[in-house]
Amino acid sequence: MAPIEDQTSYSHYLVARQAVQDEAYNRLAPTDDQKITLIVIGVYVAAVLILWNMPFIKIVLAPFKLLTVGLHEFSHAIVGCFTCAKIEAIEIDPDEGGVTRMRGGIPMCTLPAGYLGSSLIGAILVMCGFDILASKVAAIFLGVCLLFILWWARNWLTRGIGVLFIGLIVLLWLVANGTGLKYYVLFVGVMSCLYCLWDILDDLVFRKAYESDASKFAKLCGGCMSSRVWGVIWFFISLIFFIAGILIGLVAFKDDQATQQQRADSLGTLQ
Image 1 (spheres, rainbow, N blue to C red):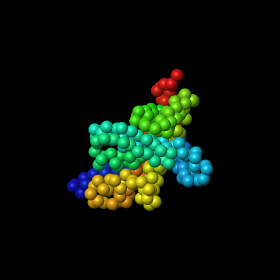
Image 2 (cartoon, rainbow, N blue to C red):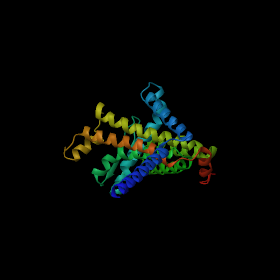
Image 3 (cartoon, rainbow, N blue to C red):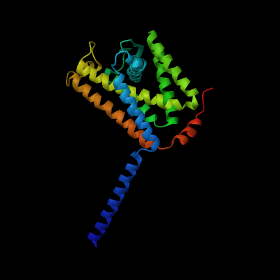
Image 4 (spheres, one colour):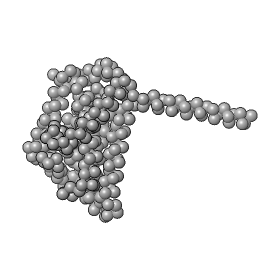
């Protein structure tokens, strides 16, 4: 009897495993509305890559590049706050660079926070971009980040970027019950993830004139690994965040557009 019982148990195991595999496939398989969102993400990625360094036309992306720089510096600053640092200033410059000035904190945490934090923010926005209600919540989150940037801003460009994108959030919230926020949040998320990936490669391959976060972190770690190695590690972590944001969005938000809009309307509109 024992072999028969073992065979029955194994058959039950195979059935249960197949059920789990089918459930995982069904959860990851995109709905018709999610296919549209994936196409939009693909269009955003292609547009950003094409426009990135195209003469004259690249000016279209400039404000969004500066926004992602702001999110990079915000990530340094917020981790600095969590490690008891005093944040003195956040500054964005027209050359798409930025600096966060702080006293105290734990450099081992604050240095990698710029790339990893802004790519995580980008991934969260991409995930939320699959749903209208989640996009509204993400827009509020993004607005709070921008308010912190405004609080710490010490030059007019940084203040201008904060005001511009907070104003855009409010405007899109008022139009068509906030439907446009979904595509705005999705674009900012894609832009933030791509900017992090490109900037890490830029630091590693093209070697900017100023010292990169990876270089500072390598020195802080006593040279146990080079800045290139740390940059590669951060690059793949950022890439994993981006992919994870898409996959979680596919699994978490299966409602169709009409249901999403109905749920989103329950959050209310700004009047």
